[in-house]
Length: 337
Image (tube, rainbow, N blue to C red; front, side, top):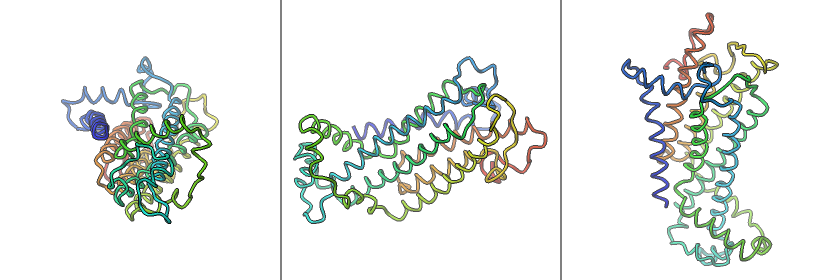
């Protein structure tokens, strides 16, 4: 199952990346394909009213973050409980029967091989927990912004395929952050359900929580994970600021299609700094994972390609819409693109 899930995720990311990368190639022979991809990707102000047949309101963005919050929370809880169950008490020797019986009463699911509680394995689980914690911080903020910051115009729409792509993205990202532990998490979840049916909640929780063991995964993190977290926070803070700027432009104009040029923070360098900040956020995931997980690299590649395409289209819209638009701004990467 583990190999199957990882392979499936990687194939899905590659399939999602390829059309966008092809659309980014500056060739006149690919214009038809590029316009086709752009038609699916357009939303909000850059989506023409004639494209509204297969579209949904842009305010449905909130569905992405509700889905991501619920899914990330479930994966985080399962991964953290699994880490807790395979961490021995400090006062006990590293006996697998003790570890398994502490939470599961000797469940057969936890007849693990010795390598499963090795330092390397516990470190990998700890990284997954930390990445899911970062993802939780990201989707919670985006959910808050969707409710309280953004004031979508009633006419703001997005293509139905763009909506489905968003649902795929926010399902696949949390899973990609912990997919290397999929087999263990699946068996662990089944074990907990079986034990709950047999024992009930009260007997499962009778032993209490050993908080030193509970927070032990965060003590297993390596230096590169904290560097990745710092990069994530840098992008997270700037995206928050840029979204606040964009949200303020539409204050008291919920029923108007009027647009103004945004200024402040990274807007002085690029037209879509919130997209640039998102790329920085996903770069933080790559670094925090140790830069060795191909699945996370692929989700990063999709984020970069997709956001670069959207930013280029937004930049062209700004240049066409405003005669006095700052000419020193680039689309998404300062001084590059």
